[in-house]
Length: 266
Ligand code: 2HA
Ligand code: ZN
Image (cartoon, rainbow, N blue to C red; front, top):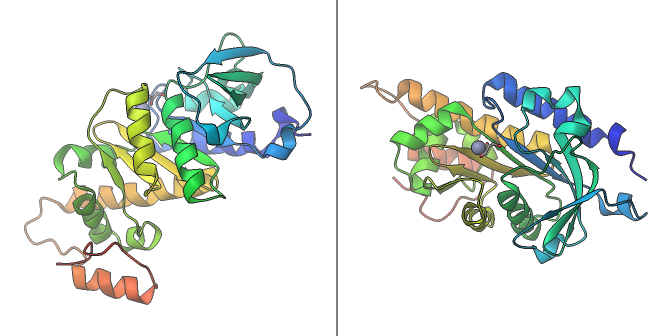
């Protein structure tokens, strides 16, 4: 049975959270992470330490066990005390059962709705999906304040700023307008986008990423953030040379990448 305290899932989460903190994407308690743990590890019954009410229960997740960051916790502090900053919870009907962690009165992230609903949506798209990560990458947030928020235009600008972005994010990015955070409305809207995208921008706030591992999800954010940073640095130069539509088509052909119909037109 999984020894939670020594699990590599905790080590990876701590490493990723510290990295996001060093990137400057996780000011104060910004950001949250959740990981679907392997079902087989939790066959042996465990004591339920506490319960947290949920206003919904995604049927796909009933009985699944998740590792999740605690509300109000700082990414930079997680590694110093995982049992206080993290929790392991089983998804029940309308509630979460705490199996480990959230010590000293802790509770799951305020964005639990976006996490659980996104897991359900991504599992339908990718059986190997396991991680949802939210953070505040500066350049992408800045870009969301000045750029057309249509998904095609936003994705095209990122692809044209850094070709790697087309190679690793050929489906583009989902974009949501600014919405109040920490509620089920933004959770539902995020999960709707997650049906088709692994990255979803919350305009003027941050990003949600999904992946097979935290490295996978974080790698996608790094690529999009790099492209947004390049774009913002060159956007106001009169003679800039972005990657053209013809060059993007050439890249897609070389890398055998399929892109949505019309998204690489001039
Ligand atoms: O966890 O980032 O969106 C703090 C947040 C809320
Ligand atoms: Zn946030």
